[in-house]
Image 1 (cartoon, rainbow over the protein chains, first blue to last red):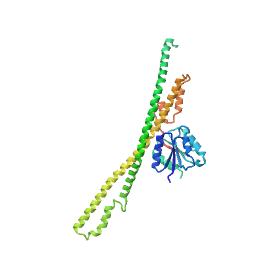
Image 2: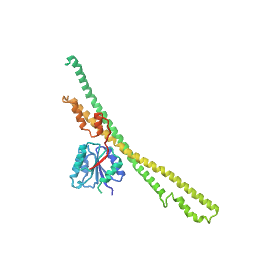
Image 3: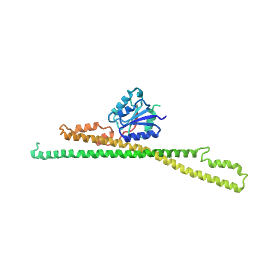
Image 4: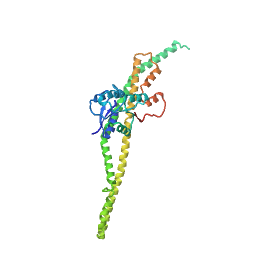
Length: 122
Length: 212
């Protein structure tokens, strides 16, 4: 069965780009427009990984990582932060929250798929 | 040196006229900016939708190209070996054939060889073309993502215009240009935004992946 990856970004076009790259490689994709909408999808279903933007309305990516890790079922959910944010302090904040990697947009499909294959739960 | 009332008056009038102009023109700029942003997002959305439709067809072409190349390259039972295989099968019986039959068999083998060569000549550029298409597809994936950057930069401008309008409406006397610019710069998320703000040129190093 295909692994499921949650794509969280407030930009619809960016969600579409990431989803296309992941679906093309055989992953199933769940989409959410911000951290809060993503959190609502963490209802016990199996999710193998999340690819998450940082700057989003309502709940940003770093807040989402903290909130997800507080849920017993998703404590070990690997999260790749995919962002235009380049500040080292933000990156450190993401690491402290529990994110597993930080990738700066624009990304190449190959680099995204490489990171996903390294981080995705079996 | 103290300015006279006569000197100050036109300056004040100019300043008031500029405030009035700003109050009127800023909402216009703001609406145009928001509209441009929406158009740009819609353009990318539509291109992506079309691209999404193309995806399966491109994948099929890539798979077919790989299948053809593999079928041709097989050492046993492959198309490339077909002419040699026919030759090997027919060789033992050629000695018992009439010269006309031998000639006919050689002509048939030559035709098979020509067909296989033609197939190879078709398949090789096909494989190269699909490789080029795949590379261009990757470039398009990257290109589409610039919309996200544009959107963030325009949103930042939009928010700052909004702030300026509020300051003008409230006749905020505490407005300080240095502080204003510092606050604006603090909202940036990209190196590129800082470079544009400071009007400095530098290599944009916004790339790469860091694993924690």
